[in-house]
Length: 353
View 1 (cartoon, rainbow, N blue to C red):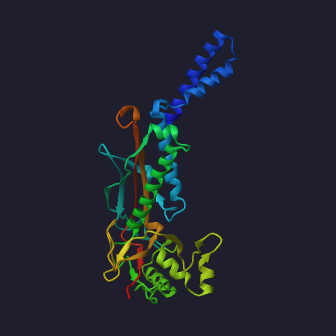
View 2: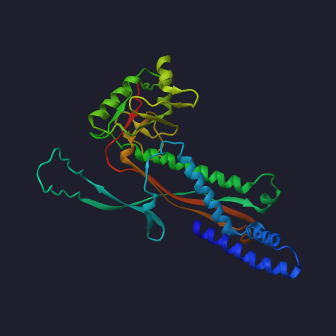
View 3: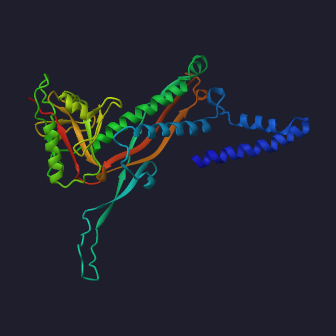
């Protein structure tokens, strides 16, 4: 798409030079201003609401949405996760996928080896195609009357709204994907042990965090890249700790928690729900029950990955809708965040009193 835009600009520039030189020669006008005027005019989109060219318009707007989606990740727990976008390819006519080879074993490490040749150890893996999630927004109507009568740029507002909606949904889905489905030997899910917060929920305590760290240490989860995404309940619980701990935990100037206990702290408002009794995660989008609780999610950067596919704008012109005389706009975006192994993850769930 970027190449197509560059080629379009180059073609428009060359055409402006030749046409401008001819007009300047015939009229006696200065060549440079004529060429500049023609080139500027060639950049104005056509056909949208009678004055825009839908092809160029869609390419520019798609690029803006992509930038907005990328920028949204930079301030969340997704920043720093290994990106495999360069390996995304088409799967059939529509889907976007990525080939991931899962190595079930790690190579054996030899210490002070004196035996040669060194033995050969195959890492048998299986090539698995993982299909990226497809995010689609519902179409938004923009009438010709709105385009011409409103004092603000309705199209920009629509574009921003679609980009924000996709960003919020895919980040929420990403954290749900990284959260373990249940408590296992390699993915601990523990419950809080603090006092009742007044709603029948046990608060998160500093001791709970230490016990969770001990569980990860026993599993030999790498110390580098331990990322803990606090749900709002647990972040508030930590704020209720004594003043000394509060000062050590919370950076008032930045509004973000400090890292400690070997964890890189993040926070997120819409964390996944769990059943505290069974320690099982509710499916994405499921309506939580009366006893369900949000959870703090842990993952290791070494065991997480992400990938982006193509983003596309869909647009129908008002000129082709004589009855309603409205434009319709929506977007489609392919993206996925997933664990690379069923280990190095965990959760802390609020227990019910």
